[in-house]
Amino acid sequence: MKKNTRAADRLVELSPKDWDQKRLLALLSRFGGRKILVVGDVGVDRYTEGRVERISPEAPVPIVQVTSERHKLGLAANVADNIQAVGGVPILVGLIGGDAGADVFRKLLREAGISDRNLAIDGGRRTILKERVVSERQQLLRIDYEDLAPVGSEISKKILDAVEKALPAADVVVFEDYAKGLFTTGFARDLIALAREKKKPIYADPNPRSPREHYRGVSLLTPNTKEAEALSGIRIIDEASLLRAGRAILEQSQAQTVIMTRGKEGMAIFEKGKDEVLSIPTYAREVYDVSGAGDTVIAVLALAQAAGASLSDAVVLANLAAGVEVGKRGTATVSIDEIKAAMGFFEAMAIR
Image (cartoon, rainbow, N blue to C red; front, side, top):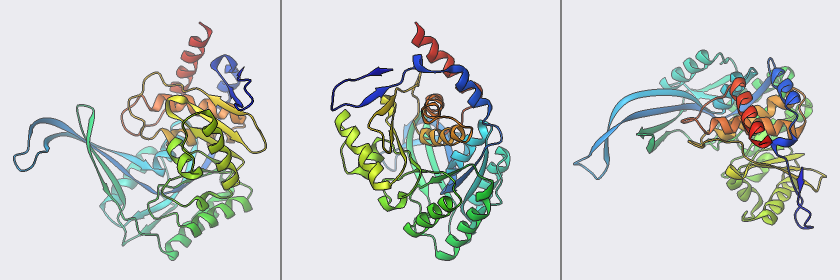
């Protein structure tokens, strides 16, 4: 490991030269059958693609001649999709409406092999749909169909009942907050209390639009840089501010671990009671689209730790998986073989 010896800088860098590839491969082989309970806002991602050949005579906007449409599991359902793609078993708990969007969502779940039996239905609410209009690989517009009103107490209770029933079978709980109305402060508090009562680790992907109190008591938080700034109130401009922000989030959330995803800067791991912060560089060969990368990170982190990985090994695997995901268009999943190929590539580059 390469260690910076400045007193104010306690970052320790982990490079591919420090990997134990045999151990990492063994961990990947143990992903199969691990059960991850995913609780959060769910929805559908729709990609509408077409050609732009002229500007509308009605307004200065492009006319898109649609050539294809495709649907993908979105939000917390994308986390579940990432879990099943690498051999894990997702237990998805969320809320849908009683509309046509719910039919599309259930069809996507069936195609992915993910159960819909833990979904609650609110007939007065629309199923979340995010439509991205794309031409020549360029996103022109995003249209969000959603209801952001807080979920009522009766529906919240149904969802918590589903969580309580599913908890005994789960290895890890993943709490996915997209600030779409499901996670009121009371719901978040009750969810964390249930997981702690059953002694299940609970990982949270925070949202900067939600109160900090939502995440108090989780085992692990995975903010990106923007989210970390919102949670800590500290603008991250250098290593010193990075360290202050990470430690502030640890203290505020009472979490055991904060893993900050930093884009091209990789990841930083903050652990309660440890002064040194492990820094892991990014493992991306090509960055095409960062949407969904955080979903891939938390999915692989949860599976790796359920499989018995150390925190550093889990983060290496999550980082490799995210590096594959950002090379794909839109929200996407990765496979075990793709993670292995990325591992081999970056290890070979480190040896040169």
